[in-house]
Image: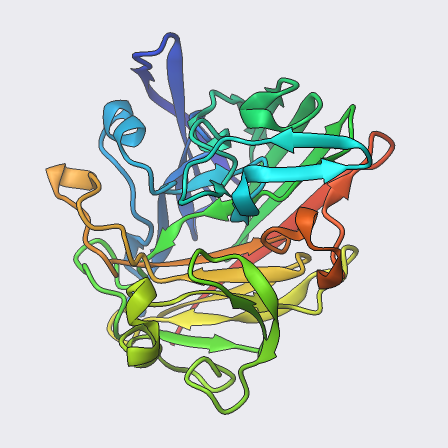
Length: 344
């Protein structure tokens, strides 16, 4: 049985109230905000059975609105990057909000992470809804989004549906920063990462795909689990201050496919991701430093790891990537991911 407990709301300086709820199934628990669909805390047991929080978050609505790291939020309408903040469909060209170099990143300056969602209980979790108006950050059409977080045993399910009344590319991802050692750790270096796939996107200096490559035998080959620092600190990634790379999954939209596993040697926690999305971005929190965290502490670069299942970055502009992210009015976008927690 999942217990659903409302917490004291926060006053949004922009107007209204930010709802907060805690849901707990006795094995794992989480706190969810109506701001951005944010997972503020996620408690899972360590090898001694002690539950601890494994995601980064903030103390207040003011801190969440100050930071630009998408801490725990849903990134959208289009996760990752749209090159030059431009895209076209047929004869219609759309100019999007520019917020990273010349690109539109994670839906723009006022993306889904900063929106007020409507939130209510489910028998095993919480449901959030959002209506994004036509032209929001430049994206076409009214977009209706439904987001479910459900706790089932030692699993967190995240499921998103979206529909539009004009063709629009949609890619929504959960942007939590995971540190499986718990709140006492400020480094991701010793986390062990294992990834089933070696197929990747080649990215330019601004994170835009230029083609595909195979990571077999390279420092980015994680088929056998290894310390994240082995890749993060490699001289090849000095220009990006660490890992910010996109792996392809071979997933089909109709079923969940195992992507890989993140584990922490001290706590004994592990997290295995299953998803129906065609790619997963691995980001080592390279530029997180200085953002506000909990307890009044500033977060550090390489404090945690983001594992972001999503559509392919800039796929709206790159048909050669063989991924079509454009959702038509008669279609429904569907993203489901399962996060399975174990100890060892």
